[in-house]
Image (cartoon, rainbow, N blue to C red; front, side, top):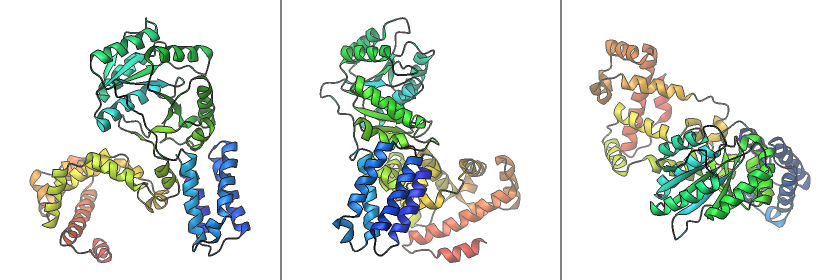
Length: 443
């Protein structure tokens, strides 16, 4: 989402970083570029004005003037101010000491509220070990209850529903009683939305809030709607005192202004972000990590967390032992590729690695290529996967036919895998491989 903004900010700061000294004219020029980049990203005008004002004051202060590397210090300041702009420290739900913790989901129709309810249920179940139930209180939108039943089942949460003929306030109250009887840790209440903020919507939310006394109210806003999302959040903040924001569709093609504006405008932090279409594409929002990604510094912590969630310690230890012996097979390669794919789109993962985000911006990464590689490996026999040296002419033709690829593609993969094996063997022996030599051999 932040690609255009990220590119412009990184370019501006690269110019600043290269200067040995900074004059007031240099700072003014940089602030002008940053201001334009933020406005083009659809960041609220008042937010941009306050942000650049704070930046300029710090950039012209003793903090920069007395620094050994003024340019690098300005980059550090921009990172800190961006983090502050998006909320500073990561926020989260405070769980009640007397379960169930009740979470009320609010938002306009079309904001992704029901899907976000399912994603949050899965997140709390898997990351916190919580027993979760969801209450279907959206009785007006066609198929809303059916949708929640489907995503609730996928998330591993119980769905409490009574159809669409009852008052949503009564359903919410009944669901809370049932969650208590069932010993649930968390009850998430999915409420109805409207096409716009109106009195009927707010009145119903207030009545449900009074009935279940939620420990947290989360507002779901669609990041793709830009400043409209911020305006909606501001109206909800005035009418219903919500606790935090769930930013849906943060992986979309919008410019990102909503994510950068909502905390400053409403005073409420972004707590969670929906980053893809899959139910698992949902994570706690970390302002510091997002600021680092925008500035091309990567997001190593999120990368590590994603990896740790997918890696089995025993499997990792077994792989390490094999690598030390120089035994890396196509079966190991397939296991590692599947693990990486479970972590998310490859382009997103590469963007978390410092220095790679900017380099990969104009590189088209087609995840279908991974499908082709997987098809080739799966078309090999178990013996061929363990002993790639067996894969010769007729075997390569059979594998190509079985995987729907060409012999040339099979040849290329086998050759690349041979180079990878050499790297693994040298690393296993504690030696750094000669990458230049390996590249010359692969030509």
